[in-house]
Image (cartoon, rainbow, N blue to C red; front, side, top):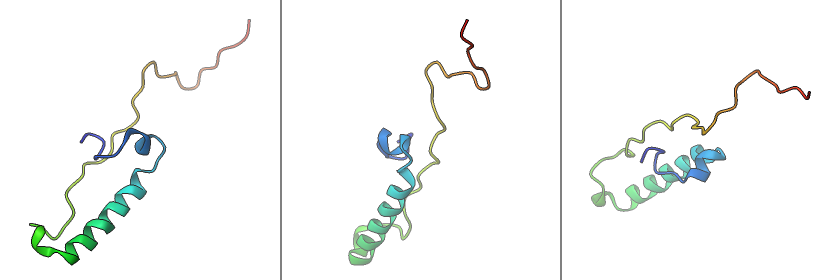
Length: 67
């Protein structure tokens, strides 16, 4: 749930926003067809996606020079 119920690949490659829009459209269509199945008229609240996570993050602005 920490990545908004997206796959790591969708988050990594930047597909999470388009997937979220498609999910919202699918939920709206299902809600219109079967309103009795839903307790709310809005999409579930999904928290913002986290920022990048690193193992050994490279230092910004430093370049290694060949000796």
